[in-house]
Length: 510
Image (tube, rainbow, N blue to C red; front, side):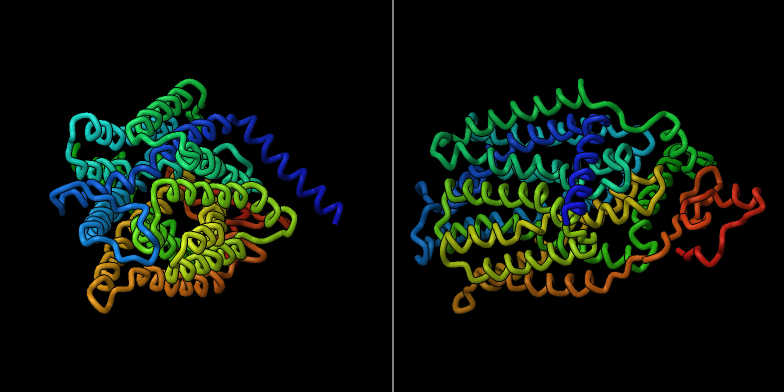
């Protein structure tokens, strides 16, 4: 046991050393600053939106937060919650199912061609319109429904996926799962620290919270501009560019670009379906993404209605979520992987099982304590995405690291857009007369998570071989070959020239 613990400690320290040497810590700092500013602001947004939309349904001002649990909210407040859920569903559909599904694979694929850093900068700047909309509302009574188009723009760009691609560029594959988990710790830390001033009553003004958010956004941008190096070499980017079949295509320039973008999009998404276990993991990811976005959109409005949540309660809920995420992604993930030797597949099943428990608790929530317990119970779900990303990143070539993260992001975006539309219908149906049961969406979520658990449990990863991976580079197909007792990826043409072609028994069809 002592030797196992020593090896696990050394592995974790080695991962941290790689993070420092590759300057990944600057990206983590940038993420932390950006997320910290957002988490200062987020507890105020549900209250501001609810009161704004309730005011549109009444003559005078209406207060819809801090109600006594168990009492039926005023009709104006119920209408406001309906409006917000509908706007959130529309926002999620447009920014995720439409824009995100199309843009995320392309942007991540293009980051293989032109470098990660320009797209990291773009991913930070794209959050600015939402904050400016809130400032305009507070100062000039600007219509707050414009907040949703701004959020559609922000949500169409999955910046964290570029961080995963960056990590895949510079971190050894044996440490990627650990470092993927470490990369999510800034979010956990910001979820703890950001809402704290509101929880303690130090920050009560939404305007001040908005100004703090925009300040931290620009600080995050400066860190990327001046301290984050490019992770891809010129040789790697040139190799990725040469793999574009559209470069040599004959035809009008615009048609070439559209055709090239369409091919990049298809090549990225095709990664998800290379093998049966890739496909099953994609199904789990899609189900979880559908529900995760739906829960985020509904949770605060639901808890305002059934548990009497106010701004301070929302801040405390976020802090608890941050504590759980930070613990799971740092100490918890390290213990599960390095000490207990848990595989990525088992991590996926564990995360889904705990999320199922969260859905059950939320579905029948009637007190603030139940809501807080549900959030803590669901914290292990944060291991699911890094585990799936680590599995897929381990079985693709270096030139496709951005593409695989983009493919995962595209699948996530589509699911995030479809989920809220579906569950908005469930939410609306069970708010009518005798059918009033606002927890119905969470019952549906629990049933779908059970399906995902079954799929994840049937995933069979190769025990003695790597999957064949095709990466066309100047007409060369990369496939798996055996060299003695080891397994590696070799160019198919190079193997043929050497007179030692790959063993066809180990080549799996796509």
